[in-house]
Length: 257
Image (cartoon, rainbow, N blue to C red; front, side, top):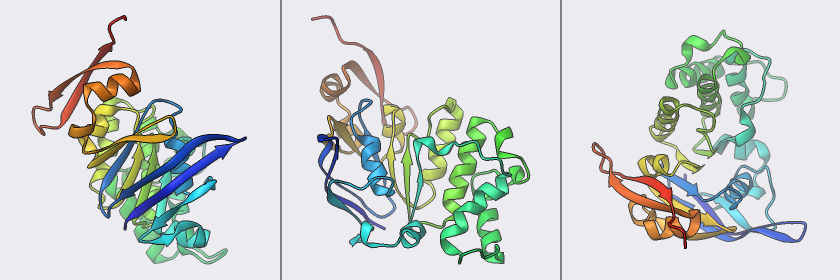
């Protein structure tokens, strides 16, 4: 499923925090938004998963206006993992994952065999089937994130939106979580803080600065020393990953002027 963002603008108290953002995430592609803190990445994603209504512009799924859909219909197509998603649920892991089935259920309906199969498959898919009976609060940060991804997968969406999905995870967990998403076959739109993770996993990156897209393209073409100095205020040295060949970055401070 294609995701298209067309001339998106968001204003808060008369100030434009996002202005004229346009981009497309093609079906099955992993598209990243990168940029400094406060650049507008999360604001864009909040419009995509309907936590925020834009001042102007549109978000379309396969050409259909997202805001013209019912909330239930859009939730059948798109699942999200916001930054604040790691909430303190007082439920078992199985119960948390089952929440992902709500868009497919009628009001006050009980779980069906299809629901149970979808939840089990989602948990197994993220390697967390053994956690089903555990309390969510007892899990580590990485385990919680895997469970929340399983909840999103149990929705059986065609698009997944991730806002800083690797926050608070150790290096192994970061690689694991993004690999799970990368191999899901879904269209993925993600805001990523770590530029090296973006370079490894994204088909396409959009660099956001001051509420605008200032560069777009393949990571190798976009993440240049000149752009990183201008946008992030750092000196970057590019090296090739020894196995994948993907561009990787080493950073230090810019020389004093």
